[in-house]
Image (cartoon, rainbow, N blue to C red; front, side, top):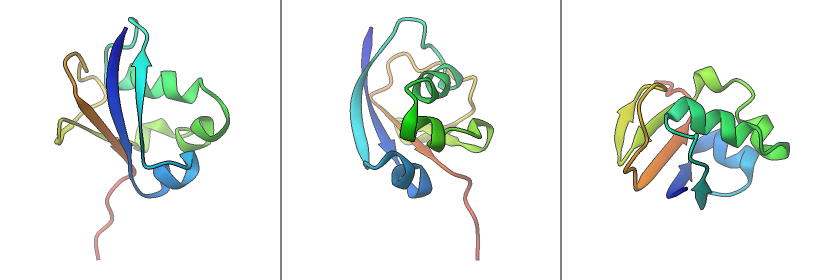
Length: 86
């Protein structure tokens, strides 16, 4: 297991009900996609926040990454909805 600090932004934060948390991740969570699946499987507010996980954007240690990116060694993973401009 590895420990990672998760930071949530915008409506992801609103649906989960917290701005961040530290989680112990199972050994089979190796990519951002695995992380999203794991969080969604926690049910309740997590299932609501990650219902359409394909639109969720991620950053590992403040660098934007794709869902296939490995999370090994990540200190912080930020999860947020798509950016909209104005």
